Each structure stands twice: as structure tokens, then as C-alpha cells.
Length: 167
Image (cartoon, rainbow, N blue to C red):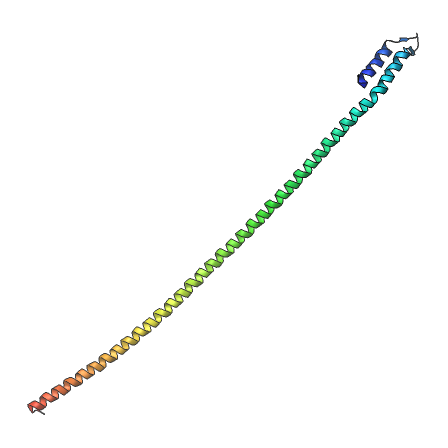
């Protein structure tokens, strides 16, 4: 089966081989052969149209597939961008929370250290007061003891003096 272009070439050959009259553009052609070419064109035309329709359909299918792939790529890219944005936001929020936690922990550590220092100072103050009180008590006890010993010594001295008759 020939293509439409082949049939057009046949018509051109028929016209080229035709005889024209002198001083005229009119030509004498073989009518039977021209009708036969036209019939063959009519027979081939549906095939050519089906072939062209198939090519157009394939072209449309390729374009539609490309559009679907492009839409899928765009959708995937948007989803990926959304995930990356969300991940960035999650990272940013986690970083903020970590910073807040670290600052809070540092503040708690400072507070704990100050409280420990205050408690230690309080304990040391109480210990100092107790030692001062103990020293005061010891000094008082020492004074009482010294007074007692001095009185005892005086009594002993007086007793000895009486024994010796010196009183």
C-alpha cells in the first residue's frame, strides 16, 4: 500500500508526461489512470487518517503523561518542601526549647549554689555561736574554778595559820 505522498508523486508524473497543446496551458492526460490514482487515494485515505489519528492520540497521550509526571513532580517537590519546612521548624523549636532548658538549668544551678551557700553560712554561723557560747561557758567555769581554788587555798592557808597559832 502506497502513501498519499506516493499517489501525489504519481499524479505529478502523469501531469509531467501529458501532452499540452501549442500556445495553451491545457494538457491532455490519461483520464483512466487519473481516476485509478484518485480511487487508490480514496482507499488509502482512511488508512492515512487512522494512522494520523493514532499519531495524534499518541502525541496527546505523551503530553498527558508528561503533564501527569510534571504534576507528580511538583506535588512531590511541594511535599518535600513542606517536610523540610516542618523539619526546619521542628529543629528551630527544639533548639529554642533546648536553649530555654539550658538557661533554666543554669538558673536552677545558680539558685541551688546560692541556697547551699546560704545554708552553709547559716550552719557556720550557728557553729560559731555555739563555740562562742562554749568558750564563754568555759571561761565562766574556769573563773568559778579559779575562784573555788583560790577560796580553797585561802581556807587552807587560814587553817594552817590557825594551827600554827598565828591568827
